[in-house]
Image (tube, rainbow over all chains, first blue to last red; front, side, top):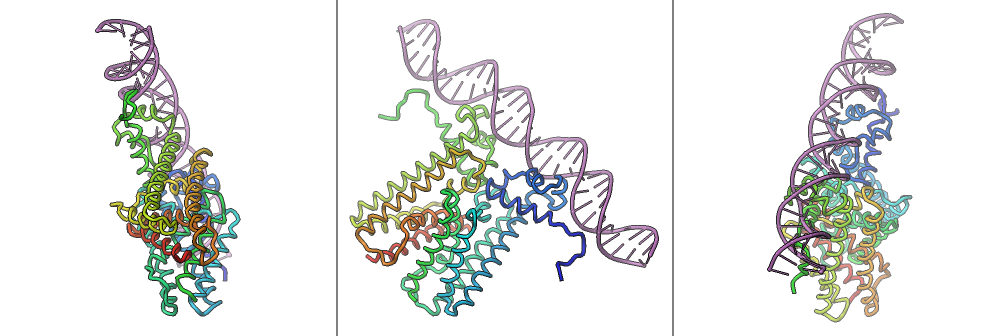
Length: 207
Length: 207
DNA sequence: TGTACATCAGTGAACGCGCGTTCACTGATGTAC
DNA sequence: TGTACATCAGTGAACGCGCGTTCACTGATGTAC
């Protein structure tokens, strides 16, 4: 009924990842020391190395968890939107609205995107982590491209647009909006950009 | 006639900043060691401390130089565009096209935006650097907002948009486009996003 | 023009601290028979 | 049910290396008189 209770249960590893994630988004990976993580979680340094063979293994786990969560969140959101309207265009517009509201509701603004953070610390990571990051971005492109394809099948676009670029635009605007919002310390920037994208979609596909 | 030849001329400081800039964009500030910078420039560590009182002073100088250059580049670009067409809408569209082409012509893609890199390493810097970063983003907003205001005065917008958000959209798309382009290793992503923004402007302001 | 001094653009050696990593060990829980 | 062993989730001490920073010094050029 509950989670499999087989061996001893601890959530130390998850707590390490939680603390690491926000530290990495604030200071970068190199500046995030194992020392500070274990201090906050309350274990010793050797405890850390029980959970991860080395620091870069944690970087990998961190990104993997982030991408999985983000994917689940988007699945959930756009599936719910689809249930609210059977026309893919209106479902997409509803999904974007819900997404903007979700972002607006974050009490301290969006904490940051790990893909963006890792991108600007590329050289610290191995091929595997970079491949994971790339796969994450391509999955976003594929996701929104699929939604746009469904729309195009029913609604002829008013202008000629590259649908991959238009799919990427969601990610670009979100990553960019997060950065601007953080820098000017205004949590309305990100939702505002999402809503502008929504306007763009509406003007490309006149209902 | 030439630069004032008063005291001894060296460009060591500028070379340090050049090397530092690309290192910071690839690995982050903390992971960029003074040691590697001086190795590439060919001076000793004490030589570094002749030019900068400490490492964070270099961070400040780096960002300041970046913002100044970026501003000069945008001034030049949109002034040239304005000379090509007296209608502010068309001048803006021309400027965006030129901007996209400039980005497309970078041989290895855009090297990255220091504002974005610093944003994800916020906590490493002092209040002064963060204020500089913020001022930079707000200057971009003001720049594009001014261009949009001129357009609105002549061309009624087809839909109701927040002009500040629409101004921010340029920066968001550029920062986002840089990240996506770097992560998927495709230098066409950034120019593609700029061209999509151009389409958006065209659809908001039907000539 | 010569000389004294100031400034520029560094050098060289030493520093201490914090970081990631290793290794031998441990006490509590789970599993097999 | 009792006992032996395995696994889980760590502890504690030690390590060496690289990092940012300091300090006393220097040789070449510029400037004042």
